[in-house]
Image 1 (cartoon, rainbow, N blue to C red):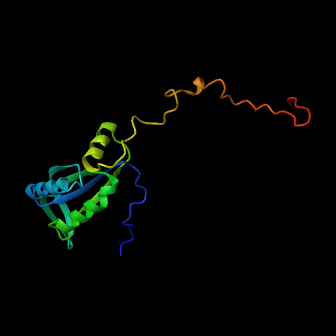
Image 2 (cartoon, rainbow, N blue to C red):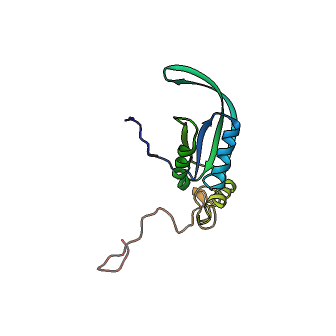
Image 3 (cartoon, one colour):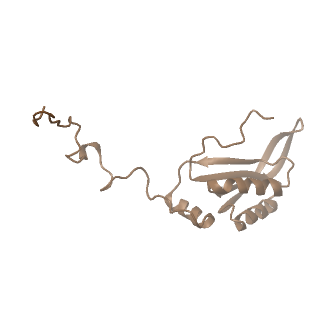
Length: 159
């Protein structure tokens, strides 16, 4: 039993990267194509890499292909299950990276590619108030921090 949690604890972003390594570029491209066709990922980047890793007590070296799958939070579980089921390695590296912020155009692309029922992503960043962004000094005059006027319940005069 591992001391590390398998559940995402503080994942808050609208985008997830799922990273995995494959024994060759051809195998990696097959995995990317299958994941995209199943709409588990909007896309995947394949990068060749020279890996050194500890395996059964020995340091091994191998040329591998690293894949970075781009997806949305609700597809991560299905993508993990798909990769675990189809991966050629006995112990595949499949890791999730939470992306807390992305451009609104890319978020729209992911939503349109993977989730027909998703609401449109928010436009811009930060909080917007009526009338757009305002600094502290640009508050409405009616919204000052002065004490509210109270009327006496007996005489109806101000205190």
